[in-house]
Length: 433
Image 1: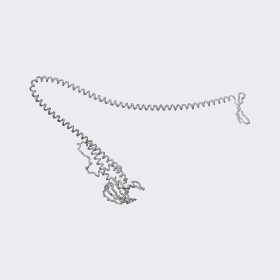
Image 2: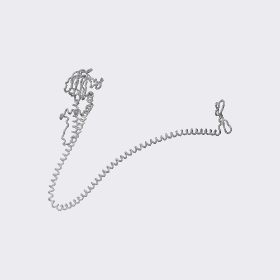
Image 3: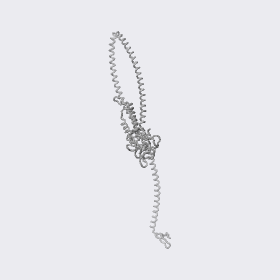
Image 4: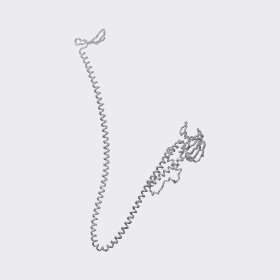
């Protein structure tokens, strides 16, 4: 078993037992200097450990304090920034208010300057007027003085000849006075008569002006009602033709080319204006007539466009336009009882009336604007090729001829040979009518 013992020896030497066993013990002898050096090293190491531990503790405490202080300073900084931001916003608001007040003051100054300029112009005009008045007064005073002198001379001359002419002028004065009195009475009577005529004429003129104003208001109300009625009638028609992809301008142009006669109820009014433009009422009337002419052209176009239903009364809509059973179904199917009347949906010319492959008994009608309608699977055809038909004419009877699974009408609309959805036309007309 190992042990260590400490023995005091002579010659300033201490013995330290370091190694031991069950059979023997070995001792290490150290000198005093070595022992002192070892004690000193141990003391230095312990002191260093204490100092290092203290430093670490102080750093830890100091770092915690610094972190808290940094957080406090950051919060103070953020509070300061917020206060500065608030103060900046207040200053910006005050600046905008000051700018607005400055702009208002500038406007007031501008107005005052304009008024001052106007006052200055008026002052100059008044000065010129005063100068003219003063010149006129001076001239008038001179003329007055000259007239006074002439009057004094004339009075002196008249005093000398007054006595001589007194007798002779007395008789002439009486005759002149009588003549003047009669003339004044006649002029007074004529003046009163003219005044009465003027008053009557003014009253009549006021009545005419009042009637004219009432007539203008009545005409304006009539024109407004007519314009509203025409616009209300035309706008749905414009929308109806646009919804089916037809250009309204092209449709109306085509109708005009087909009806190029002169005159008629919607011909614009023409008045002699002696080189001047038409008056407002004539312009409004012509505008209404133009829109009525457009409405009339739409009426004609409606008859020539397949907006009507080919079947009337009771029927079932069994199939629509589009893909069906892996193939394109180019029309719409309407089912009803056998022999149900089939009607033309627009004015046109029959181009086919007979059997055609899967269509069975088929009627083709060519309409205006490149539109064609087809009526298939008929039981009976009632028209011939080349025959002109009108909208609503009965052209056949419903059946089940050709490739058909039951009694129905297969109805197609084609533009330029290309099939389009016929329900587009039917729904567009249904929305309007």
